[in-house]
Amino acid sequence: MSQAREDRRPGGALRAADVSRSFEGVHAVQGVSLTLHRHEVIGLIGPNGAGKSTLVNLLTGFDLPSSGTVELDGRDVTRWSASRRGRHGLARTFQHSHAFRSLTVRENVEVAALGVGASPATARRRADELLDLVALADHADAPAGALAHGVERRLGVARALATEPTFVLMDEPAAGLPEAEVPEFAAVVRSVRDDHGAGVLLIDHNMALIMDVCERIHVLDHGRTLAEGTPTEIRANLDVSAAYLGESAVHEGLS
Ligand SMILES: Nc1ncnc2c1ncn2[C@@H]1O[C@H](COP(=O)(O)OP(=O)(O)OP(=O)(O)O)[C@@H](O)[C@H]1O
Ligand SMILES: [Mg+2]
Image: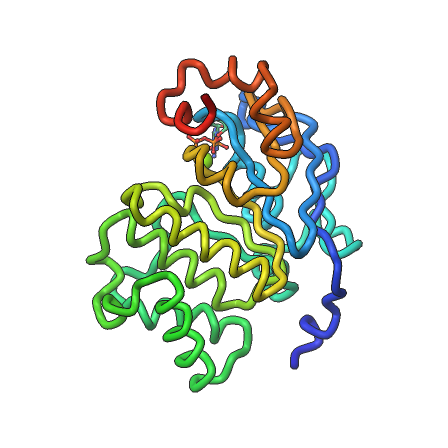
């Protein structure tokens, strides 16, 4: 077991404290604080351009905040690289494809496992288990580049889980999934929490999915925290409803 893994404390948390990020005058994230504990699923929602992906980038080290700090299990990791955070239990999926297109689906997952020190045999076993979990076993030998967009996102989930994360941040993993497959995906998210004890942050525009699997929901609008609370509280929050009135994609489940 690596030093990094031994360092992981049970019951830890991933925390953003008053983080901001601006892009040439665009305040993408403004003074947002958010805590994700292990053994929980939280939702991060908001209209297009609200700052959700930017916040995930700041939490995972793919971008640096203009101000504020990020803590992982009590340590200030604000300046840590994404790969270093990855070795300390942080994983993410991407809104846009990051798969190695010419590798097979299975190889993509194996590479992720190898990247955190798994042996080739373990990487292979883990890849097959995870492809089963995300219902991609039938595609294991296909090149990742051949996958349809929605299917490719499930590969992103398998790749994130292959690192055996303590925290996994999923950026619209269910986008493009046929409605009939959403409950199956919700079961995957619950399994990551219940069977692996991880903390999950889930971004999605499908409010029915968010309301179904999340214990707490954090709402962003124009880079700021608009509301946070339980699904029941968020549903009742008129400000949230108002922020969404123009967003047909998110109406479902909120009304
Ligand atoms: N690298 C960048 N350079 C310039 N502006 C950016 C950059 N990344 C994000 N932005 C801007 O920051 C704001 C927040 O974008 P972000 O992608 O975080 O939103 P989002 O909530 O993830 O939206 P969506 O639901 O469409 O994925 C937007 O105005 C976006 O145009
Ligand atoms: Mg986004």
